[in-house]
Image (cartoon, rainbow, N blue to C red):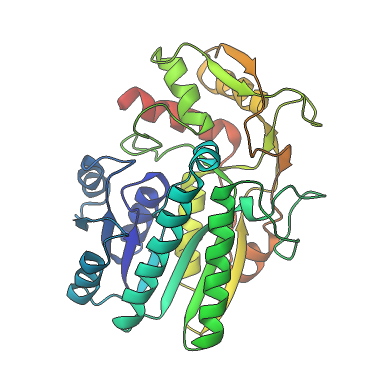
Length: 330
């Protein structure tokens, strides 16, 4: 299968590209490198032995996107590209709405114009807002606690309307939880530009001495140690969830799956697991809660196991060890 991967040099996108190539698929990457680096393409080639086609393009540039789709007759699209920092979305909501929603519409219009009917969307557990109970199932009520989550939920609504209007489409929405870790080669991982917004790259940069200490946003949540609890999933497990999704799209339909481990770990649990995996202490300071964050969030991923045959393989210490291995090589 020939697949366009938007955001393919980013964290989750690059790992998914590696797994796609390993499974024999041909990939075309679209990325504007706003939160990634061009040498990721070289690293994907080094890991897999095959160099993906790469376009330095912004999903907001409709003319350029049209040309890419016209030049590459693809069978499917996996759409990762988008801004993703919860805190920044609270500060700059219009930028998030414009980039994430308009960019997705551009991709969908180009895809339809060029006869492609398979679309996998990178959604998020943020669409569940602050759930009343955990673990979270796909049929839970949907709401959002921040503009980033609202963009994801809005796009899900667009996709549902699009499927109603075009029943020949095969659309899969993957709601995933908190990816961490890195490829075992140590060549690709979570390497954002600037100061990281995500927990694990912040921890690894503290471990490396590039940042002084970890900031823990709040210790007064109703959790076992007061810090926020999330479902941390190894990025390679998550990437393989996309492979399972794309290989189960023969028939037109709209499908929704959670991708997570089904276990919740707090921020301080991660700090302790990192110490156990690497023997490195992470100094931290407790600060105020971050706007838009919730107390607890972890998945019931039994539907993905049942329908896609997907399940996670890596445990928390694997995630910490691989993330540190990547940071040391970065």
